[in-house]
Image (cartoon, rainbow, N blue to C red; front, side, top):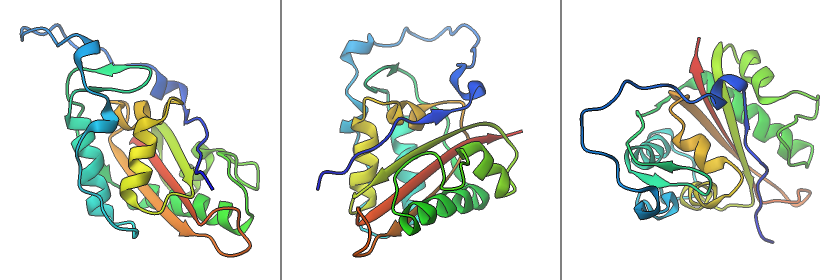
Length: 189
């Protein structure tokens, strides 16, 4: 069964690109000459979700000039840090999807990612969520998000986010998918 993903949801604050002062450095390379972000090399082998390895992999992508399907990132983006409250929000959603055998950014109780993040005790100025199902390990799920044409790569590369949390929940014989992944990205207030 081929894994699939839904469109990343972002709050309005996350969709507004930050403004930067004019640079005196040499101009960025043309976006068409940048490699696809999905070709960035990172180390995230293994089926188990490891917060350190996962964060390092995303930060390697954020540090590399590359292009997503819908946008080029010619300059590095600041690193993100792991946050246990965002991890809790991600875990709650992955567990909900597995337990209730569905795949959506909308929780079984009708909640959206922002509501789940707030329930976990995190006060977000901006937030985003990537979900995936069926991917066997960290490397393939990250690569899948980077290859996505639906905003997943852009969420990973967004300067609007400074912290992340992620979760993997294994499916069982009653589930449509073998794995349920959630990545929550945010910036605190």
